Length: 114
Image (cartoon, rainbow, N blue to C red; front, top):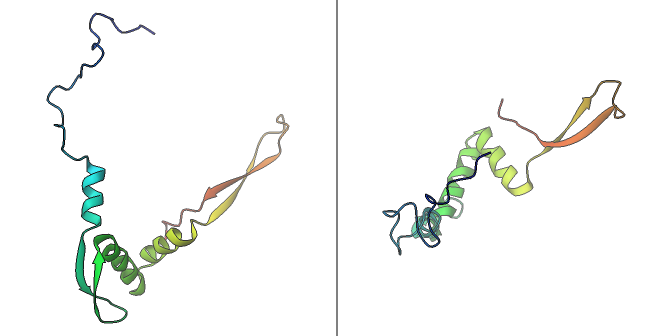
């Protein structure tokens, strides 16, 4: 493996992207967090009363509403978030030359075929 040419490497403190994101401009994580924390006044689907909800709470309620309408993928996503994804055991048998006959692996169950 060849090492990079020291003469063409950036010097300490130099950037390879001189026209990059200016200082003070928030990154995508900060922008998304700010948007998800915005508050809106909406009708609570359970109580029927007006309440303040964050954007993320409204998204959670939309996912739950889809599950209530029979969307099994939405229902599974809500349960996976609450209880963790169900694990399945895989029995892997190997050739006789190996000292191991089988091993059990905990692998999250993929239910995307429903």
